[in-house]
Length: 508
Image 1: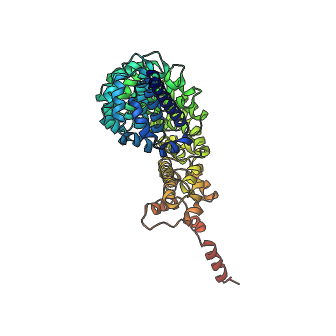
Image 2: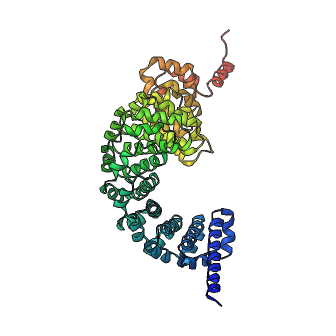
């Protein structure tokens, strides 16, 4: 065989390998082909191509493996069991930028599925190499490495700590300063994933100077970047008062409030989440938000959203109101109660209704004035019906019961309590009767109204355990009226009267 013929054979072999690997990569991009490729044993065919002498074949083989591993955890596990990871890690340090991107994509695709698969990536020494890639001159390599590191860190604190120990955090902070928007997004997302697990991990991100840089990007016009920036700041602020104060000191107010009006739903949600995570810690932090106009801004946001986007705003109002009477009154003055009532009535998801019920309970539990603000807009019957609805989730029933208890124990606005006399079960009724027993002894007009509206008659129909708190309340109410009035409205009194009529012997 001549030299020319030998070269032709090698060229044919190279073309065949190139065509094979490109076709597999294209097929792997479509989910309907994955099972067929898996059954054909494509993993074992791709593995040797990672070591191919032709760089484009190596890169395309890595891309195909990444697409397969990305599809489900079974295929990701096959990559691990096929002993492919060590080869990828070795090549990640040695090869060109195209291969580095493809190899980092495979690591990300494997690591995203479960902590066990992410741990397999850590165990094969990938973190150090990925961190080196964060210093690469090519932004695409940095982005691919940051993405893989974020996907590993997001699972749990141990994996996140491993990413920190590899020295990723300072380099991720540098990445958010790069001009490329895509790299900024992924770096912010990775910092968010590292911060979320514990105060110590969040502190590591803070110590690397992340807060100031993230805060400066809150008003960046790119919605996807804003989402990640707000998420990262939320994950830092949620852990402790000190961390929340550091976020606030970066002068995020009132700037962050503009994000509540953003056209992007996730920007709105993440902004409300950030405000919630700050507000929950102390009355002082909540007061700072109130002073910046945050209550009205959050209420407007809740009114302009639907579903889960509303949830952090609803919870934020509850956290603020829980701290003190004054802060709860700030929510009332800003028209927060009607908006929470709308959420309670129109939302379909039980967990959102439960959050609205909880928030209303936090507002109404302080004083009669706070409870009245809730009672006058007829929220109590809605809470009661949700509590008694058999299809309500257990969490919704618990939250509505607690809210009713909180509000009823302070409510002295009797017109709102009266309908509950007829509908409430005994465990709620005792709070309603308790409030009547507090008000009626001191209000003659209310006593008269209680008789004419049928309230006194209803009280006589209640069967209470002798010596119980409910019986004490009933006795207190009955003591507000002449004995003959109480007797008149007691069950069986009309029959007793008729019996007396029948037995009465007229004097002739």
